[in-house]
Structures are given as C-alpha cells and as structure tokens.
Amino acid sequence: MTRDDALALDAADPLAPLRDLFELPPGVIYLDGNSLGACPKATAARVQQVVAQEWGQGLIRSWNDAGWMGLPQRVGDKIARLVGAGPGELVVADSTSVNLFKVLSAALAVIAADADAPQRKVILSERSNFPTDLYIAESLARQQGLELMLAEADELPGLLGERTAVLMLTHVNYRTGRMHDMAALTAAAHAAGALAIWDLAHSAGAVPVDLKRAGADYAVGCGYKYLNGGPGAPAFVWAHPRHVERFWQPLAGWIGHAAPFGFTPGYRPAAGIARFQCGTPAVLSLAALECGVDTVLAAEALSAGRGAMAALRHKSLALTRLFAARVQATCPQLALVSPRDDARRGSQVCLAHPEIGYAVVQALIARGVIGDFRAPDVLRFGFTPLYLRFVDAWDAAEHLHQVLAGGEWQRPEFNRRHAVT
Ligand SMILES: *Cc1c(COP(=O)(O)O)cnc(C)c1O
Image 1 (cartoon, rainbow, N blue to C red):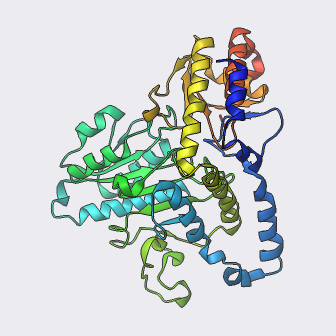
Image 2 (image 1 turned 180 degrees about the vertical axis):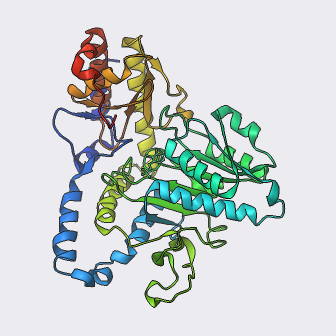
Image 3 (image 1 turned 30 degrees about the vertical axis):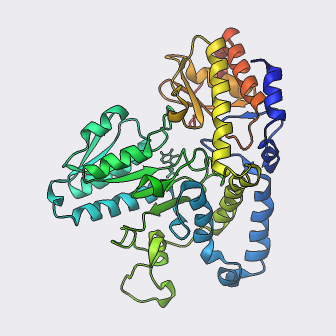
C-alpha cells in the first residue's frame, strides 16, 4: 500500500462527496468524531434560522407553528432508521446518562413484575463499560438493594443465570473499539430470563444496528458522537414496543404526560415512547442534532441501494484496516488494542503504549492529527467515514510514525495534562 493507492481509493469512493457537508479546518485530520462529531455546514444556518425567525419572530407561537413540540419525535424517527427501530419507537431527550437511568429503571420494573422476580437481584455489565453507565447502574442497584456484577466481555454469557435481572452493555467499547454480538448476547440474556439494554453511544451512525432483529429490550445512545449533533447534543432512547407501555419511567415529568397542557395533578403517562420524555425539549440543540443526523442519512442516496449504514460500514472498515495495517508496519512500539477481526471492530482503532500514550497524542494534535487519549494507556482514533478520506488514514499513520521515530513526544509541552483528554 502506497500513498498513491490511498489516493486512488478516494478517487473511486462513492461516499467521497459527503465530506463537503462538513466544516473542517484546513490542515486537520479529525480522528475524534467518536467523541465529538464534526460540525455540519448546514448547522449554523439552521440554528440561526431557529433563533432569528422561529424564536425571534415567532416567539411562543413557534411551539405550534414551527413544530417545536414534535422535534423529539421527528428527529427520533430519523435516528430510528439508523438503528433498526420502527417509526414512533424512539425519542430524543435528555442525556445518555439520564436515559440509561430511565431504561434501567423500567427494565428492572418489568423483571420485578415476573413471578420468579425475588431471586433476580443482579445487573450484569462489563467491567470496562463506560464509567457513567456503571455509575448509573451502581446508584440504581444501591437504591433497590440489587447487585451490580462486573465481568470481562468473554465471561458474560457464563454469568447469566437465574439471579440476573438485566444485562446492560455498551455495544462498541469506548476504550477498545470491540463490538459485542448484540443478537447473540440478547438471546442469551432472554434464555436466562433476563432483559438486555444496549448503549449505542459508539454505534449509532457508526456501525449497522438492528435493534428489532436482535430482539433488544431497551436502547439509549448519544447525539454528539457519530450523529454530529454538536457539543452536548441531546441523546436518544428506545424501548421495544412489547415493553414501552408496561410501566412509567421514573422521571415522570410533564412532557411525558398524556396531556401536558391539561395541567391536571395526577400523572398519566403518554402513549408509546413519548412517555420517556421528561421536561421541555431543547429546541436549539434538537435543530442542530437534526442537521447532524441528516448528514448520516445523506449516505443513503450514494449507497447504490445498500442503505446508508451498510455503505458507511463498508468504508469505515476499509479505513480502520488501512490505518491499523500502516501503524503495525511502521510503529512497532504500539500494541493494537482493537480487534483485528472486522466483525468485532467498531469504527475506531485503539493502540496502547504503557508510558507515552498521552504525550504522543498531544504531539499528534500539534501536527493537526486529532485523536484522544483514554487513561491509562490507550491512544484512540475514531474513523468517521462521512468525512474521512483514505489518504487521511494513510497520512495519520505516517504522522504517528514520525512522532515516535523522531522522539517528538518528549517535548515538555506534550507531557502536561489537560482537564479534557
Ligand atoms: C459518550 C458516552 C456516554 C455519554 O453520556 P452523557 O450522558 O452524554 O455524558 C455514555 N455512555 C457511553 C458508553 C458513552 O460512550
């Protein structure tokens, strides 16, 4: 593989035009779309329109006239198409952490209603799951007298049993890029009498997900990563139709009420997934999120009938394969943490070094190659196929080689820790 080969892949790439949908600073290779997606060109004008016209001129009338109240469902329906959920089944609201609290509570209520419930006392998750997911589960376990059991990924199937209430996992591991087999683990959870909750933070817009076909029970996901919704974009929540109306979710706010503007004292949950809303929708953030989701859906028209996510996945795997192969050929100091097997790798490549990972990432950022560092030892590079070129993957590996070979990472400024890594 040469740099010219990478350029030839770009010239033949049917998704190449999508890059033009984004604001990208010149000279930057952006490998952090898994943490904060790039800014779509459409977003600034759309948010400006919402501010100046809908809010500025329409004022409160815009809740009706501009469809503000329906935004959580409208954007939710678009995201549903990317994760194998049906229309009206998924809603945008709150943050991933908050939504996880809601669905875990709801799942525990479903399980508690079963005849054999008293012995189901365990929430099972992965030890290296994203900390907020584990903190939320720890808090709920504490409130309800349950046990949070943590295990390595390979141990999970063997630990499912008659004490398991819920299997709660993140589909693609944030630190390693390893992807679980959602259908197989969901089936194993169900066979044990438990429910399965999936966090799609590193999956939605990054890898094909089919929640319905996998038989998943609940899912949550993030708006600001591969969906390009902007910093702090609201998150999404999905409940399988077989569960959605069985219980209230615990944050029974007025926007999840059957008749918010009835202003009655008693809570009556709205029909369907609408009940998973709590308070007033974040209209400006929802408008920005819709622009981001539209960039992913734009892959549909260029996918030759395969569908947006299938086309994006094809390119994403080719990008991560190329980058991993170049790094392994030129940077023997670094260990490949992400799975080599395409079927088990998300849309990122993670590398490890026992000492100098943080400084190497800082040196790369100074060169305009933006990845991130996840303590204690992981150099993390996210590949968003919407806006990355094959030559970017090739060049990023070359920069990494130069930073290591020339000892550039040793400079003092690259060894000072910032708050956000
Ligand atoms: C990014 C991420 C989150 C973020 O949660 P917030 O509530 O948006 O801060 C949660 N879970 C996982 C697995 C993530 O990767």
